[in-house]
Length: 100
Image 1 (cartoon, rainbow, N blue to C red):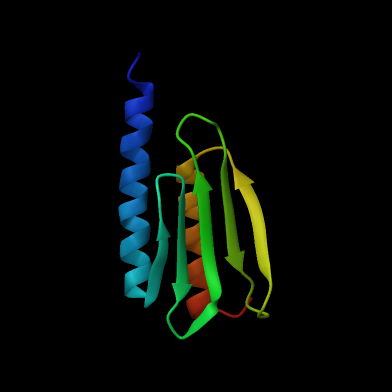
Image 2 (cartoon, rainbow, N blue to C red):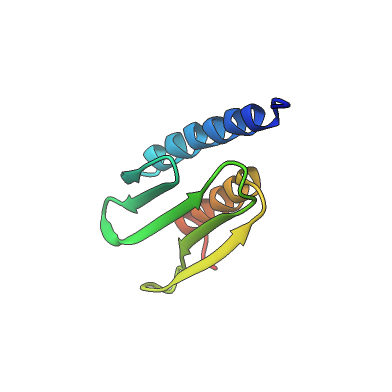
């Protein structure tokens, strides 16, 4: 083992902590929290959710985010958890504060 896997695990754990803090600040609740998936729902609307599915070392992270138009999710895939983290952070901030 070269240690790359451990470094990736540290980055994922850091990003998960940052995401959790952001969602709590925006008043979303964590409804699923496993090693391979996290889901947050908006407290005021349980049909509005963000889902992040991942696995260290597999090379892919699936993200599903709500569209502002309501009732529609946009699903995409990233090569790293940090890319997914940045995307989710931007989309949730947009969802909370901007019209798009």
